[in-house]
Image 1 (cartoon, each protein chain N blue to C red):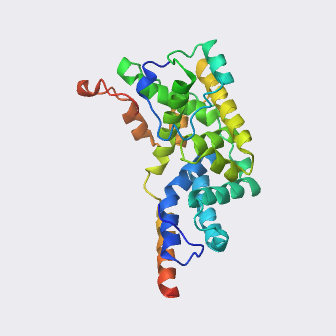
Image 2 (cartoon, rainbow over the protein chains, first blue to last red; image 1 turned 120 degrees about the horizontal axis):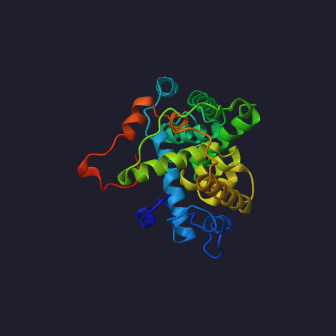
Image 3 (spheres, rainbow over the protein chains, first blue to last red; image 1 turned 120 degrees about the vertical axis):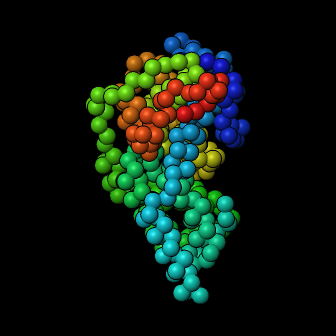
Length: 83
Length: 205
């Protein structure tokens, strides 16, 4: 499934990093299954987080729809008239 | 990110709102799995935040506060029941695999697995793994204990392993791309074989 995962590091991986003091259950599941290419739970967690960041970033980087731009414009106008 | 006050009339509050909008859309998409429903939810969350701005405590995490409002709207107003998605459509695109496309296809499969997860699992993975919130902040957003968040993250990752290890992927690549907001052309472009000069690139589509 995956090769050379060492190069994939998710942002903020330290902040919410895996609980290194214990081996997560899904790692046991992994090592007994067919999901190769990871050498440690931390490496797998970093890969998961990198994929999640990519999913999240796809939406964050989208241009804002017109309805939001209109809403923001109304906010600005309201702010001006309130002052 | 701008540091807001607790008055919706201030430029600081509005600037913070503008900053957080893309993140709200991403979190809402992870909950609803539908672009239109997600944007409706964000719109309602913004309106709610403007009317409840005096409840925001300056100095606390504005993004977490907005995520909490959005999540409460989602779970309290019956929106959850409308987020049903068909997984029955036939897969229409089966890209051929070359070694240089391995990372892209892995991401496609990860995305398929992610969108098949239950609400609780998608939510907690996005909050902790992608949005930049700490476990503590995610626990506040979800109104539960930090230990509960950690347990959910672990179970969610276990479910991902299960889906990616076996034959549990029911959603097609095109379906999962559509939920993530990619149109058909963008998705197809992402499947095109890379140019020779790009053949060593890793890590994304």
